[in-house]
Length: 424
Ligand SMILES: *Cc1c(COP(=O)(O)O)cnc(C)c1O
Image (tube, rainbow, N blue to C red; front, side, top):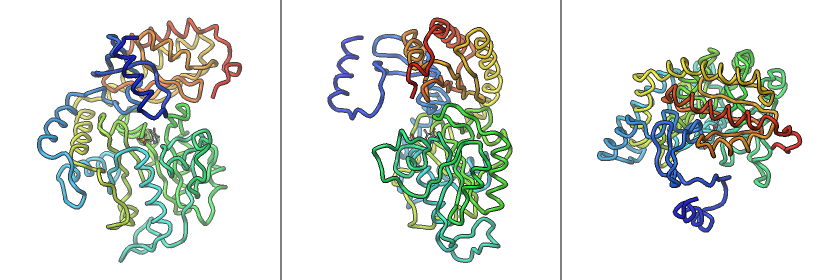
């Protein structure tokens, strides 16, 4: 490692809280699917920013939006109006479903907003003039607050988002958790039905669990949830923070299955690298949050909204959904072919540019070996390699990534099973 890299890492050790598992790599520049390290090497990144750089690092249209908007107005208090927030909200509603948006700064904050909105909706009397029958979903005032969540889900690290997350390993040591989250097995409609009580207000689910190992919700499960939520007057909330904005080949993953949620949570790719999140709620539900009930100082600032608009424009005009839908079958076919002669690959699954490769062995040494060959990928749940390539990646770059991955996996084919390697 270079002396300058060493110096940066020493300063982290001394001054930055040690909350992340960090790789010994200092990165100073990125473009598209490539990043450059202080070690002088170029890396190919198939997991750019945990899905944040879904358009690739420093997409030129996002850069232009930031340059232009930062010369006019970076931040504006939400007590005033700004044309770009109006435009970004309108475009999200047009892409997903008719409703209203609350902008946040992160995914976890979008989850917190959804939890607060759900509690208001389930408990507070309806706002003036809106009654249960005339306002459809708006049936407040019943003392309902419980949210049914899925095992192995991931919703973020702030207290309510952490409490909603279905993985005890993240919650240990942070008790008491926020009450009111009822955990059931993923893809088990009967379990959800059984968990509904007079206190239930909502069901929260990721259409594809990312952190939980790239596990897809069955179409039948999502349709069943929609039916159940309609019958029992519950809110259906889709956390599409990782799957949204084109990652799976449609704007939102739920559009593959055809059932829409009542609340849609977005972040990550939404800002093209700029931190911004959003909650889109159906109109009648959104109206339970009245002036003074919820706020955020930075959320929806003009700079962030300019980024959202640049992302939407790029996905649309550069036909990135089509790119994902063209290149994803190629990626999956190559990986599936590899599975035929490498028994350490247990399963290849996913949708669009959200791919999980489940191994029979611990995935972390493979991630490290790929990095040594200048390819960056992720491993989750101990044995699942996760690829979240940028929608702008070229076929040549995908080919290079695949050949490195093939080399590394072939080399590790003799590794002992994950059970012996104590996977987490
Ligand atoms: C990343 C993620 C979050 C949390 O978002 P942050 O911006 O890190 O707070 C929540 N839900 C899902 C599905 C995610 O992938």
